[in-house]
Image (tube, rainbow, N blue to C red; front, top):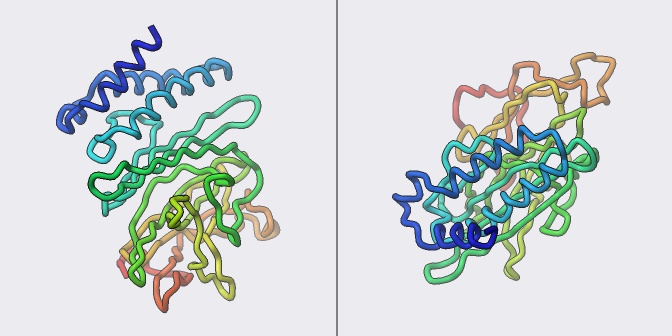
Length: 274
């Protein structure tokens, strides 16, 4: 029975036309029900089983010809974003466990030239209390783990990279938001990070913000060359070194691309695109 259901899912995604896929079908309804069950289950053993079923469907889906034309509808806990140049799509979700380590699951799909098969990267990472490093590059084997909610292509000196905005819940005391750079190496591997972000005298591979898990921080693209975010300060001035006590003071900072780098600017007017 399980083999028959899987065969149906694969056949659906290999043969579906974009218009039919967008109108919703059995795999969409199945995923919606699985994610609802996943969020409502009390037992880790059941959550792991449900997540295996989700992975089976998504793994077939990302290999399908309709991956760049189809999007699942009404699935609250599944992230689906596509770059404006339609060259990269990201599908991601997290599995929260009451015991052991919760996990991130992420698929990066890179569109190749016409007639060539898309490249698919399947990444998994466990939640960790450790901070995401700003001074190193990451790859498929040591990916830090996050949920990405926006991606923008950025062409510089004839080379296209993709700027990623993401969020990490790995530490129960702090939430992390991330600005990172996605690249694909000539050997076909996937890479995260680029010495592109200038903060004071430091040149960073990415920017990572940490603040209280009870707080809210905005991080968004404001224009093609600017990324705007809340300025974070300690809620209690005596607790400057404890990121779990940081929050927004309702002013804004930004990274502005100028002089070949993303330069940190303090106290910007977020109402106007740069």
